[in-house]
Length: 328
Image (cartoon, rainbow, N blue to C red; front, top):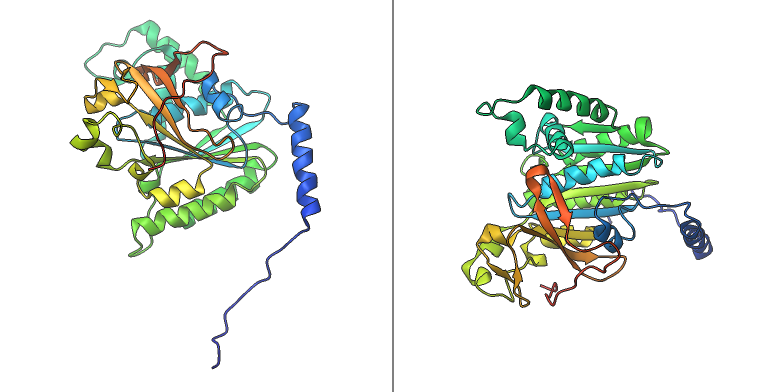
């Protein structure tokens, strides 16, 4: 039988000694604080993520519609610049769901403690002093090394844009890529949504290996968590792996999977087997932590109207770990 000839290439390989030297060098640089994680304002989030946002890592932020995941990542993006001024950070944000001007509006909301409704609504008369503060704060934001891509595209478009941006702007910097969100990436022809997400994850696995590059992608949860039998069962009404759209593909590619959950949105009064009070609470479920292995649940006060979460645990106190299962 004559085999059809196909184009092949020999993949590069190296001896384990080379990889060992790299591992030891990384640990040494960590010890000497030559490698520092990018900090966020949330100390307990940092503690559960190896000190903050790590290079060569894929973070997936999931939640139901309206849970606050875009607000959370918007503020996290601001922190990467404001709190890490000595780290030479640069951000490429594929803002497919929201115009970049609205992204900036959320940053202004957080900085000025004014809701976006107060800033944008035609029904509210904006005071002159607030407008002056907006203009002043905008000068700082203009200096941020953040670049937005507003127009949705295909996986191939995203790959081309990342490569061009890396070569021309991000090389030798702490490069953070944000994508909001996975379901808005366009397919080619009759390509299924599942295939698009699979191709996107393969791309991100490749890109995260670029030096000092981090991926933060947002993804939707399906509607399973809204089912009455889940809502009414304290052992079942928390997020599970199977609640993530295209769960297996995204879960396997990600180093961290973090679910933003607001039980109040589902009319849950007490949360989980521990019957936690949920009024004005936001919970971050660490559904996957490739580095530490532990799946903590972090509790915050809801400050999302100003695009923020407020820590409810004193600095130095370990994050609460509740008896939820995350194996589904």
